[in-house]
Image 1: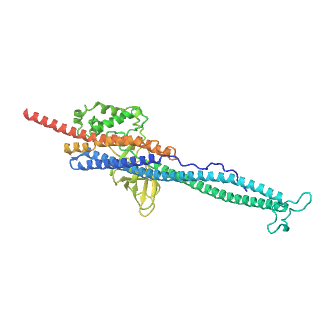
Image 2: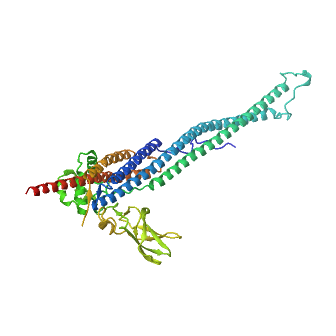
Image 3: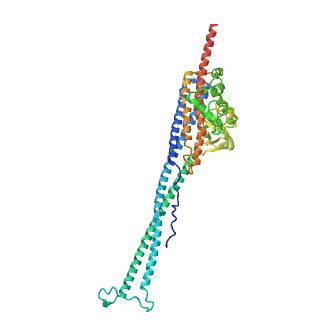
Length: 419
Length: 97
């Protein structure tokens, strides 16, 4: 049975996207990861160099801030490196799938042409066969007037017979008709075999093309999960006592901030950060407040951006979505309500912070609190801290609460931790 | 009673070491912004552009953080030096009286 005429449509698509572009993005993320890691080390190195050269309350505040900045740069570097690896993997897989898809597409198109060719060849061959069979039937049919079958060659005509006798003519016609039928049958068989092969090849390459598409979709899904999982917490900015401002590209002052930051980087307004510090930071610890007047006349631009960031209502400083507070060992606390089993021995806060218990409650829905004893870290102050109370020899128990008494000076314990 | 010890030059040097952060972070910010749309035409485009947007939002913080930290150290060094000079001048003036 002849199948339906081939549609000529390969039935699949090659996955879209620009693997080279994604690969370039991976390289840029890799460079960014290196850069952030290097600056994390620079921040740590600068702080380390001041261990003995600067001591006092301001120095302590700086060291705490520096540790958080260092940590954030490090984490951002990790995020960028994860993105770089994931993007490169995606680019490689997409490239492979696109190549496989294109090969499958080309093969499929070629075999579709073959399929169409042999489909029509088969139609022609079957038509020829029908004609040949009709012809054979006609020449082998009995004489309609006498009812006798076509005569065999006369034996009196010798061993080869008389080729012009009616019997010989009839036999020749029959032989010719039989030959035509045989030829047509052969052509039909060949066309069927070729059509079968072409159809199988089309199906095979369609399957390969669809598989390449599916694998490209899988790679995109994997990349999506990876990319969605990367969330980098920005570092605190020295001098912002109410936490960091939210910097959004949509804000009208966004370009201005970049300009100023660029100026600071280039040394054009090297005093910019100085004024920031003297306005909010150093006087806050009461060491050299009297000296601020000397540097207060720094670049006007620095004052401008402080005003923009700190006081312009559009800057959203008070409602910062990425407001943070520092968690200082021995000062910051983890508090929450949770089930406190026997043997509760320590607390584990967000971002891997650990804490020693202040007391040892046992029971359901107990107020659990502790003081951090690990390294400096940070909380998202606008969100409820989720802590895990760890027990000796038992599974961790989650308690929920907010961090408290964090960052008394630098990152706004009053504004952040109280919320 | 407060107590502090400081070598202003060292504080200033530390601040100088941090000066390059903002510029390089902003360069990376620009480079990453240039990647936008690289995943167009794929199901991962939204996630990709989301990450690019996330970087665009947070990297300026890193630049500002570096600049502010550098500036704060420089400012502290200047202030400590100015205080030193002021006290020295005052001491000299007192001695002359």
